[in-house]
Structures are given as C-alpha cells and as structure tokens.
Length: 408
Image (tube, rainbow, N blue to C red):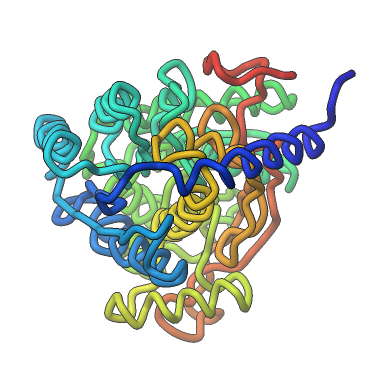
C-alpha cells in the first residue's frame, strides 16, 4: 500500500513522539544546548545575516521559554570574515571544545560546504544561509538545511512568476563567476522548457563598473525581461546604467534581479530601483503576523527590518527547539529526523514540511519595488505581485542530485 504524504508524515511523527516519551528523560545529558551563529559580522553580507541572525536566534529561544529538555540554551557567535579557513577553524573549535549542537548561517558557499562535512562527521546540524545548490544536491547528507531559500529557488521563483505574467523573451546580465552562471543557467533552462526564448546573455567580471555597452545592447533588443544574474554593487550598477539608457518597464522591458535585499534597495534608492521585480520568501510587511514579529525584531536591531535570511533563522530555530523537545535524544540525526516528521507552522513563514534534501516546502513570492510616490516611509519598499508555489521553486525528486530525496 502506498501512503499519502500527509499520512506518512503523521505516522512517522506518532512513532517518534511515542519513542521520545520514554527516551527523553533517559538521556544522560547535563550540558547546555549550544547554538553557534557562524556568520558575516563585518563584510558584504553583514546586514542580511550578521548580528540580525543572532537577534533572531535569541528571539526564538525567548519565545520557546529559554530551556529545552530541561536544559539551558546558550548562543555563541563569531565572524567568518568570509574566509574558509576562519570558518572551518571556528567550527572545529566549537565542536571540539564548546560542544555546539547547531550551526547557523555560514553564508559563503565554500565555507558552508566545508562545515557540512564536519556536522555529518560529528552528528551536529547546520542551518545554512549560503545560496549554493550543492548543499541540497550532490553534497546533501541529512545534517544540513537551507530553510527558506537557495540559488535554485530564487531563480526558479522569479522566472516562473514572470513567465506566468507573460514575459517570454529573456536577456541576462550575468556576473562572470559560479554564482552568476548558476542563476542564469537555472533561469534559462526554465525559460526554454516553457517555450520562451533566451535572447542573449552578457557576462561581465565581478565589480564591473562600466556596463554601458551592455545596457545599450539590452535597450536595442526585443527582450521582455532583463534578468540581473549578479549581486550587491554589480546589481546596483546594472540598475543605474539601465536607467541611464532608458531601459525600464515603460520602454517595454521588465528589469528583474534574482537576488536583491531590502538593504540593496535602500542603498540604490527608489528613484532607481522603483519598478524592479524581485523574488523573496519573506517580506517584513507582508501581513499582520510578519509585521508584529518584525516590530519586535526592529526594537532590537535599531529599526532595521529583518531580511528573509534572518526570518528563516527564527523559523528554523523555532522548529529545531520544538523538535528537540520531542526527539529521542539531542543527537543531530535524531533531532533532524523529528524535524522532518513534524509539520512546520510558525507566525513568520507559515506552514510547510522539511524534505530529505534539507529544503522546506514554503512558497516564494514575486514582489515589485515601489516607486517613490507609492512608498510611505523608509523600508516600505515592496508590493506583492504573486505567490509562487513550492512545486515551482524546488527541484523535483527526479531531477535532484541529492541521493536522499526520492519520489516515493
């Protein structure tokens, strides 16, 4: 007999809860549960992870009551400096001398893949805020999670949503390194499979200040969408120079950034960024529940709203603590098995499930950046265009490189 997903989840959860009732009290542990936020405190990503991720972890702990399994919960934090050797050095020390149970963030892909191997070897867990698809693909090992985004989900959400809006002809401005190639490739495959056309892709080196030739060529093309497969200052330069050459929705071309944060919009300004299309799994002003939680966050962050990465940290740690309370032990493998068997339901991201590849089944959203006339205050930057369901933003079991993910 083949069980439905909901029935399988329910039976698995029942079995785990029955086992944990007898075993939780029996676990001989007196050490605190330790969560290590290994993040970017001073570099490129510090405003989307960084101290805000520490805030999110502490909020989750406070909301849970400050203890789990009768044990106190401690939070450690350190700056990766966006260097692999620093990242692995801190991770190794935390495992060997601090007994860290859960790692948070590790935002650079090379660092997160290195820590991924360490948590598997030592039966710990990693909730990563790096975009690499390898973590949930060829390097998946059952101990690491990308809670509410990765490069694939961002590219797939933006592409599928704009295709649904009728935009079929795509032109890419791509950062010429793995990150940009990845975004472009994911999107281009979806466009072609949907019967659309890839007009052209222009690849530019990281930090290219002069994009005028590319902007001029884009303006003369028959593309419906200009996909910005870059990030940070490269994206801001693309936006500025496309505007200088009159490329906008008013000229018949949508400009869409695969990865853009609220801070990027704040830095570029609505005069330039207004009208841009962006995908996100969370926006602080989406509904009453997100506004209420974000208000609490902003009281701790000096008024800066939470990024979708920081919202994911809160949601994932909340689910971790709930599952840890009911797991048969505090060992990583036992806790993540309970996490997968337990439906997710929280006030920040809503309802979903954790898959075997470490991805969750939350939807993504297509937003458009507001114009200066539409915005009423600082951080009032986005308006919702459409929801993109999970099946359009996650790799199907048959196409994933994760050996743990099956179609059964």
